[in-house]
Length: 49
Image (cartoon, rainbow, N blue to C red; front, top):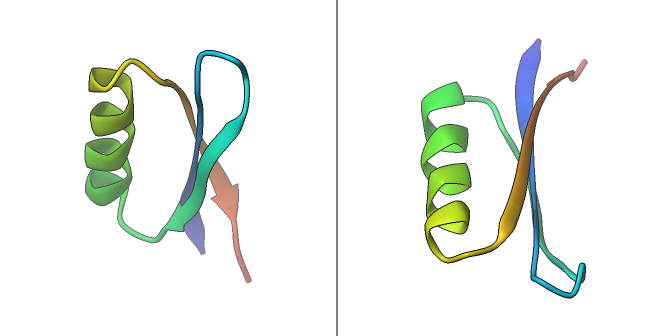
């Protein structure tokens, strides 16, 4: 099953959040929100059994 992992870091590189979403649009909303707040955010597709 394809899922999406979103990891957000603050400007100092500290982990703020790391979530796995089963819905790409929800992952994109979260990612966009983190970027809008000025955080670094990485979104990647992963496989979850």
